Every structure is written in C-alpha cells, then in structure tokens.
Image 1 (cartoon, each protein chain N blue to C red):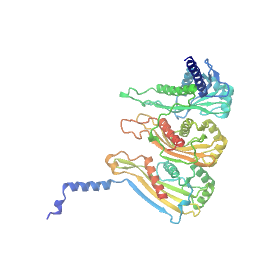
Image 2: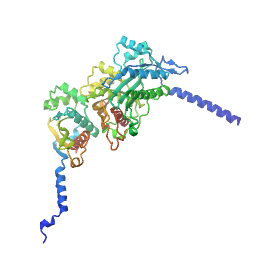
Image 3: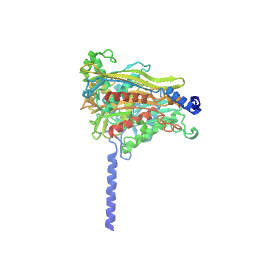
Image 4: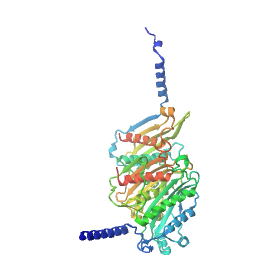
Length: 197
Length: 378
C-alpha cells in the first residue's frame, strides 16, 4: 500500500499552490444586494426623477458623474421617462427641499406633484476612484440606490453594487485596472438590470 | 453630318450655359444687398473680421491671429472691413462680446461698417509648451435682419501630430503651427466663398469615439427639417469655458447637416440674457420652453461636460466626458440623449498609433458620431 505522503508529488503541490494563490488574489469585486417591494407593480412607473446623489468619496464630482451615467442609461432603456436634471433642480427649489440627497416623504410628495414624477430615485456613491494594494492599483466603484414611490412614499426598490477593484490579472500583470468610466457603466448597468429584471 | 455637328455645338453650348447657371446658383447668398463686386463681376461680400474670442483660458497672441486671418483674406482678394472702422462701431454701440453675433450688433455692423458677413473666430486651445498645440473654430455669419451661419469650420493641431522618422516632422515653433491652422481655416473659407460648400469634409471618425450610451425617441424624425438652439453646456469640468467649447462643437457638426437650421450662438446668448435663464444643474423644461419661444426653435440642445482636459506636454493625453440631451418643443420631452467619454490613448497599443493629441480633435470626433446617430440612427 502506498502511503499518502508518497502520493503527493511535486506537480500536485504546485497546482494546489497556484489554485490557492489565485483564489486569494482574485479581489475584483462583484458584490450586489437587491430588494423589490412585492406589492409594487413596476410596470405602472412611467416617469422617474433622479435626485442628486450623496457623495461619500473624496472626488467632488463622483456623485454628478454617476448620476449622469445612470440617468442617460435609464433613458436608453426606453422603459421609463427620466425627468431632465435641470427640471429636477427646478422642482427641488420650488418644493423647498433643504437636503435633496435625502428627501423626507413630505418633500417627495411635494416634488413629485411639481415635476409630475411617479417615483423618485435617490443614491449614495460610497466609493469612487483608485484602490491600491502594494504596488497594484485599480479603479473601483460602490453605489447604492433606492426608489421611493410617490403615492405610498415607501421604498419600493433598493439595490447596491460594487464593481472594479484589483483582480488577479491586475496583480499579475499590472495595468491599473479598467478605466473609471467603464467601471461606472458596469455598475450602472448592474443596477438597471436589478431594477427591471 | 453638318446637321449633327451643329446639333452637337448647340447641345454643348446649352450644357455650358447650364453649368454656368448651376455654378452661380450653388454659390453662397450672403445678403440681400451691399455685396461688393470683384473685377470678374462676381459679387464678393464685405467681411468684418471680429477680434478673436479667447476660450483657451490662457494668454494667447489674439491680435496676431486676427491680423493673420485678415491679411490672408486680403491676399486672397476678399473685401475686408478696416479694423479701425470696426473698432469705432464697437465703441459707439458698446459691443463687447465678440464670440457671437446678436441682432443689435448685426444691425450696427451692417449699417455703420457696411459689412455683409462677419467672421467670428474662437481660440479654443493655445499652448506654446513643446509640443505646441492650437485649436481654432471660425464661422461666417450674415449680418442685417436675418442672422444665419453661412459657413463653419475648425482645426485642432499639435506639434507632434506627425513626428515622422526621428522626429523630423515635429513642429516646435508655435507660430508655424498657428500659420498652419490659419491656412487650413482660410482654405476652407475660400472654398466656401467660391463654391458655397459649408465646410471641409470631416475625416471619418474612429468608432472608438462613438457615444457610450444613446437614447433616441421615435418622435425625432431625421427627415424633418429642425431649427436647433444649442445652449452652452453646464460645465462641471475644471477647464474654463468648456461649456461654450462643447456647444460650438455641436453647432459645427449640426451646421454640416442640411436638415438642421442652427441658430447663431450669439442670438442664443442674447435670448438667455433676455430670459434671465440661469442653468443650475442643467436646463429645465420651463427654460427650454422659453428658449423655444424666444428663438422659434424646434429643438433645444443642452448638456453637461464633466471633463475637458487638454494637458501640456508630449506625454499628456486629452480626456473628454460629456452628456447631451435634446428637448423637443412640441412634445415637451427629451427626444435624444447621449453619454460619451474618451481619452486620447483609447485603443492605442503600439507606438502611439491612433493616439489623439488634442481634446479639440477628440471632442470633434465624439460629437460628429453623436450627431450622425441623431441624423441617421443605426
């Protein structure tokens, strides 16, 4: 009978090491959360207002960039009409909303009446920019959003996503990861998929 | 045989007459009256060369550029309004804005200086740091009661656009680059003045500069002629005047399409001032309605610019990121929206092949493809 120590040859050791190493290195993030209100009929939504997003990053334009990409991408689906940002700003001013990134239910009711929206989407950009690990860098984005329906003033959809980050490829070959715009688009597409499907 | 010869002579004569007639009809119609006459009998417009409007955000030899344009136009045989006469008209009528033409300015320039058309030139980039870079946009606008953009063209050059073998083709002198840019503009203008061609053909834009996200409503009919007002873009970038530059890119591309009647940016600016429109975060529906009414526009194009970077130096790569949308007056809805972003080294893998050196050229290609999608959707 062959002992188990004799079965472990050099090749299998190397293969096991590579496998463990790859798993350990694969830090490219792909995390997501999703909530849909089971009582909500999303097919009724025709017009949506996207509020300015909260920015928890050091990049002062991160929220504006993500919101812009989200609005155009949502428009491009052709499923809902997205109220233009200038019109949303006018509505915020007329409704007297003090902090548009976290509007109260009363403020949402006022706003939706002014701009004739069926729902309001708010969002938070948690992370936007480069992450570094030793000598490797890559771009990462982390966004969460929620939709509040005008009649019930309840959160009917909520989702979050994280895209980008340092992958095994980045660790092995460098390159700085994917461009920030591409990572943003991937995150937005993920959120839109979660909203509709 | 004699009959057939006389027939061919007659048909040749008719063909010649038709060709002459077509060439006259194809020529530009500058204004209803006042155009000067050349020795050959062909009417030539009196051109007022406006001072250069500096959108570069840096000090630049503006007087030199204006002089270069005036001198070259004179050498080409064009009738140019004297600079001092024009300055007097500006002083009398308190005209300070030279980046566009509104109705009072158009009327004053026509009546007091006798100009049929105005050449408005914007300097969008100027860098004398090696390699030098320059970007110019010019347009010819008719004066009088009917302000129309007759011709528009632009050029963006960098000293290292074609460095060639051992950098023998590298242009180090900014004046040389400036002369090249002016020459290109004037060649296109001369061609317009003789043939009526609106602008030189755009080089085919690279597919990598296509908009990344596009929305197009079926309401927007490519066959219908539209009057378009292009608003200055809401500028979120760190570059001064990026909003105005991006608006000019759209104006230039839209002017090239026959089914768009683009309102002169000077008239749009005057309407924005008259309507006291402040675009906080973009244009609202009420503002778009007001602009449509004031300007009699079917479409109002506006947008946001997030990045318009044009760094100095050889290793620097430009970056442009913008979003544009179009309001339609009748439906009171956004009928077209696009999101576009690119960097100068996108899709470049070997030896800088395919690299774009100026934000002007890259933005031009991005807008060209966006407008093509608007006109001819895939």
